[in-house]
Image (cartoon, rainbow over all chains, first blue to last red; front, side):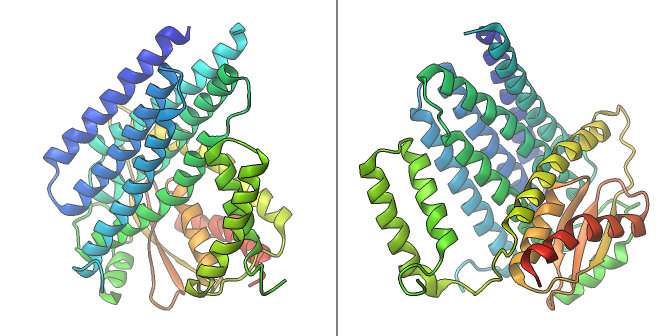
Amino acid sequence: MLSWVIPLVFAMLCLAMLMNLWSLHTRSGLPDRVLALDTLYINSSALIILFGLWKSTELYFEAALLIALLGFVSTVAVCKYMLRGDIIE
Amino acid sequence: MPFWFELIVSLLLLGGGAFILLGSLGLVRMPDFYTRMHAPTKATTLGMWGLLVGALLLSSWNSGVLSMNQLLIAVFLLLTTPVSTHMLAKGALHHRLEWDKNTQGQEHAKRFMDDQ
Amino acid sequence: MRTWLPLPYTSLLLLLVWLLLNQTVAPGHLLLGSVLALTIPLLTMHLRNPQPAIRHPIKALMFLFRVLWDILVANMEVARLMLRPKLKLRPAFVEVPLDITRDFPITVLASTISLTPGTLSADVSADRSRLLLHVLDLEDEAQLIATIKHRYETPLREIFEC
């Protein structure tokens, strides 16, 4: 059962990421694009976790954790830039 | 692996994938930025939880010991997603981003914009 | 106690995260994690703003489970709204007056609101007395404010006693 469930979830995640890319490309304005990127990084870390399951290894877990960490920090940094026009005051 | 266990894991993975897909669908469908923000915060967080709990169960079964490290990502996401959305909304208000014409209570938002 | 263990909860959390990251409870990692959990708070405690402590851990735990349950319900709600072939939304901005005053409880409240049914915290006023929310599908403003105050703010006030 898992042998077809995991590829199906792969397809769902890829579709979700394509939608994110579409909205990243078509929306105008900084906040909208940052929102699309924010969703994109969460989805990509989901994809990496799923890939780790597929290959049944724990190695990819840390990559997913790092993407989640760096994605959050960069989103907050860009938001700070939007709010102040500067990152380090 | 017994069938019931495989079924639980499959349902969790499929549910997680479905909610992540739903979050991205909301990002495409919603009319303005403020409504668009709702989908990724809620649906994607729940989707990640489903996926991570499924991954936790499956990798625990495969390795024979309870592996809890997927929970770390789940808790991290639960703590950080609202923060980043709040910052985004604040930034959008600061930029006086347009909202949908039939939004109620626009005067509240305007008052907050003038405060900043 | 004050001097060598200034932030007991932070230390516990650091040790727990260390063990989770390394996927082990081997004595070596326990020792290394404990050393880190003791020294990191000592080095960083001066960077913190003092925040009110959790006075009732059991109530906090119950609050956490309630929030997790509400997240599940919230998602069903948002999914139902989003999957209708024709979007019929009643978006709105709502202002909620705040009774809690300290930064940390307000942060917890705002995060909870963001994760639960159809609401999203957008801004806090400079004097920390009002919270601006964006609602996806507003039915009754007064009722929504009452629900938030009763369901989330009152337990938080009890937990932090502020």
